[in-house]
Image (cartoon, rainbow, N blue to C red; front, side):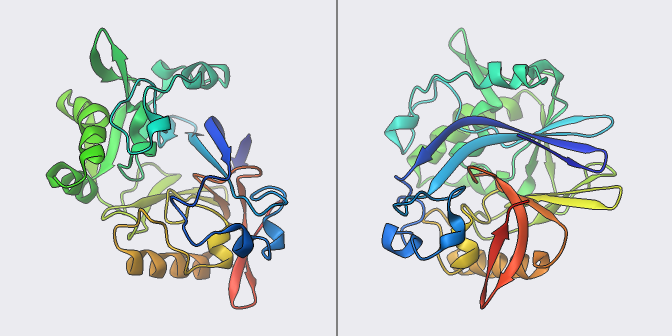
Length: 284
């Protein structure tokens, strides 16, 4: 899937998609609770009320650089909290190259945050060592985000994520620690969307009067537009995350900004509209 925002293109590269099995991340989204939200079908839920979700990267191409936003789970990783994410073998890099973006051609890797499914392809296993997957890229990570996860000791699986997918590129001198409102280029800038993690950011794209927003995980699924009080089980600060969702939905509602979801399956992108006391995603 590909979208054009002025002179900028955004291309979706899927690692894997799932239907159902999402209660671990959105515990309130039972089938019975999802079924009344009719506009979620067919793109974002099935006829039984099971959520459709995707783990994918988004490649943003401007006139002078290629940016990959969030790098999924990755191959060969171990000690993940979800057993099915251990030792994965997917064709993600081949699919990336087929879309016109061989890994050597990426200029910037942007991590909206440092959770397991957003940093995995930062590195790849070569001769028993984790090395940078994108050898010519600078890796942009929020300073507050990086420092939080570098110092945390409680979450064993997140320590493993940091050790195999973050520390190797940092130790290789490839990481730039940035502010949550960093301007990356004339067309690209970060937007602080805190709560899911301490330094979480989204990516604003603006070109020739058109705009888009790549969400990261300030929401995981469009159902949270209809039920903004449904929190992710992975939210670091659930109350702040709820306020962020509310503020962002208010800001986007009724505008022409294209919201591109980092975990949205199906159509993946749409515009936010008011829907009574909540919101909905209108797919073009």
